[in-house]
Figure 1 (tube, one colour):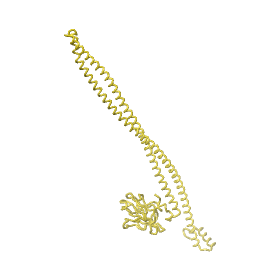
Figure 2: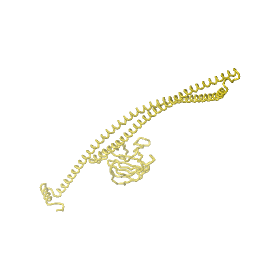
Figure 3: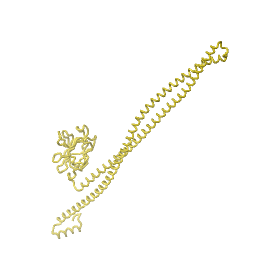
Figure 4: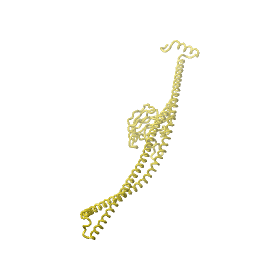
Length: 393
């Protein structure tokens, strides 16, 4: 009896051997198979439990995805509404600008009128000054005569003719004085009216400019408000799109894991494999081009990581003329993936790798004149279109 066998187990084996007429050794192997079957059954149960958990998580993520899609539709509708309102504001701005053109023409006319009024005012002021000067001279000339008349009186004049000439001259001088005084009064009124017209023209110009500027400022403020709101909505859209992208990536990964619980065949994951790196596709799969392009060329950031698209075994990791350092991974079923122009390679020949495992970094790729990656997928050493196997970008 061994250390692991109890009397009860030994008795059970002997009884079973007697009943079945087989040797105890055979019964022992049958027991091992039974235990193995039990273990496999437990593993299947665990896989089933894991699959159910992943299935529930996928359902939750799909619900989140639908919520984010509704949010995105609502934000897109808000954005369209804002652009429609902003177009109306821009139309009003264009209408106001046309009105401004008309007002500017009117303002130009008013300014010309103002200049004419100012010129008229200047001439009136000059004429009034001239009249005042003439009146001053007349008074200066008249005042001594008036004084002499008071001193000598009229009867002291030597002859009637002289007196008559004196009175006639004085009469004309007095008449001229009255005319100048009346003219001064008229010119003063005209000057006051001209000043009123000039002030009125200035006020009209100022009022119209204030109205136009206020309208333009109000419309521009509305436009800026709409633009600010559009920026907010776009920021929310970008955030929602990023979250939706993460949810979709999670769903893809969960579907991948769900399938992994039941199979590890490379062909079962067609269309679900991740891209080998993040970057811009410079040239896609074009086997009929001249020269033929049998893979995907990508421009990537400096030192960007390159990952295996699926599990497999590294069968080549060395420099290859014209392709820099090349890593080739065998995935079974005669499928191979090739990664060229690598730097900082982190895998060796014979190493087992998993999906998304880092195999190196993007090195210098002459086609993109900078860091990049050339990727191929082959079946029986013949290139196949990677786009059919990788997750859609």
